[in-house]
Amino acid sequence: MARKRVTPFTKSNLIKALKKGADILDLSEKFQKLPSTILKEIDELRKRYYNIKFESKDPDQLGIFKIQPQELPKGNLNIDIDMNKLNADVIEFGVISDLHLNSKFERIDLANAIYDVFADNGIKTVYDQGNWIDGYAKRINHGQVYQYTVDGQLDYAVANYPQRKGIDTHFIGGDDHEGWFQKDTGLDVGRLFQQKAEDKGRTDLHYLGYMEADIYYETPLGAFHLRTLHGGGGSTYALSYYVQKLIESIEPAEKPHMMLVGHLHKALFIPKYDGVAAILSGCVQDQSNFMRKKKLKAMQGAWMVKVILKENGEPWQITPTFIDMTDLGLKPRRKYYIPDEVIKKRRF
Ligand SMILES: [Fe+2]
Image (cartoon, rainbow, N blue to C red):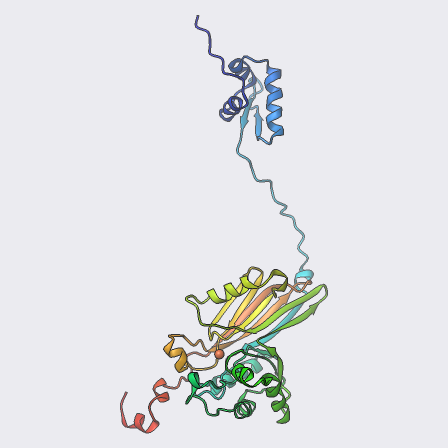
């Protein structure tokens, strides 16, 4: 009689056998070892986190040892959600940016319509992310503004920036446009704008700072951290790219809960990326010559934002409402280039 081949009793051979599944007598015979020795080794494997199950379906037959795939533990599905902690406070504000007043591409009509919508919806606080005036840089907007001086443009803005009873507008200054005056002259243009407004009896315009400002809405266990800012640089190949890179570039400890981003003249809402919600504010100016040459789209409009805050200040629910003002009462663009009397004579 031929002798049955004995498999060497190694860990890897035992694992191989257990993957297929075998009862204790099969294993004992296969390795020519006592069942107690085999059981001891199975215990060792279990200590090294092998998932070895023992299944015994029929009481008359020996049970089977078999290595099974690891299973994820069952999660705790009974988390107690305390709605009071999630629903600690509600805030609402308007977002408007890049009015570029004094530019021949300005849209004071759209800006006023937006403030009417704010007023109708009970908005009391509005954040403006800058470029409230077009500023003056000879190589960029010569011939495209009504006034070239900072006083002329700011007086114009005081007279034309929309004002509604009960609405306060908190603005920051951009590094460009109004910022050109700032850089050329060392003048704090934002403070001067607020001062000029106050001199004319307007107490609704509040300067928050140059380029960016942080606002904190206190909650019982923390604060909602909102940042309003004017971006920089040119537009990017995709709508979300600029703001994604911007969020990534901010150190974790400095990251706000939400950012309102002006400058790009684009509108976008990102609910949460790297822990930060973001709104690209849009603009309230027609596509300028500069933008036309650079093939940059002007997304005209503004936002109303409602945020339900958790007890610790984090946003729980964000409801952004975009007020789309594109193509509304749009002046035929040719008017920027062709005098009225010529338009009347010709059919287009
Ligand atoms: Fe702008």
